[in-house]
Image (cartoon, rainbow, N blue to C red; front, side):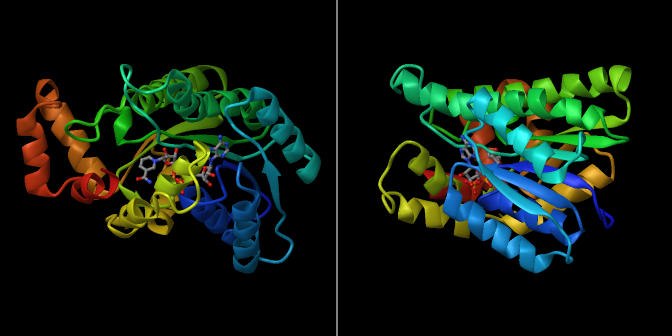
Length: 294
Ligand SMILES: NC(=O)c1ccc[n+]([C@@H]2O[C@H](COP(=O)([O-])OP(=O)(O)OC[C@H]3O[C@@H](n4cnc5c(N)ncnc54)[C@H](O)[C@@H]3O)[C@@H](O)[C@H]2O)c1
């Protein structure tokens, strides 16, 4: 992405992981950035890092907001317009997400719906709140983060994954439909769906925290997930921003995401069979995800 002085970007889940990396890279390009998160300490650290990276005069602001609560998302939108004193923005990254319990049989309904509400309604409410601000400008981008679980509803054998997968399929389908809607009704605004493979972030620990786990309870798993990933959050953010700049509406992030996408397209009927997983293992696709996460 070229230098973007004076452009306004909004990033949900900007306290850590890919969200933090997006905030830093956008700010380094001269964008004014507003981020939200549920973790205030992490947001403060993101702002500190982004300030150090960005040209003087760059406006950075943070706002406590749970994206699964529409009233809070609307309050975040009001914070953005008040902070920047503008009626429009240029980039919206609906990035916040958590993993969570995945069985329709065994998982508590409340936990299942919490994951779904953050991963799906977070994107939906973010789009409802900020799309008018993108339409009001001269050109804008809405960038919604799905996952490889937006086209492959599994984490491997013996691991039900219904809530996260349902939400991520919804984000993918919604954003693909938005591409056509915007072409017809607001052609100066572009929609992009992001589908990362395994990216080394703190999502395991942050998701456990979202369900009230004491700090450190999943420390080993969280470290393995982060350290064994084939791509860092910083590299992933660079891929996402390059995809937006290139006008790609579907942005696969990582070799594992590209490989899995091809495999599912080539043999969809096989996608949940042992033979498919064996081929994934042979190729090393998402190999460390399975080891780190379960
Ligand atoms: N890391 C991966 O391997 C991977 C793969 C595919 C998709 N994704 C998706 O990428 C996005 C970013 O994930 P990440 O890996 O950088 O995770 P992360 O945990 O490092 O960052 C996510 C941020 O979102 C925040 N957040 C969580 N719930 C929130 C809520 N209700 N409201 C506001 N903020 C909230 C967290 O506090 C955290 O700062 C998510 O949507 C995730 O599902 C991640």
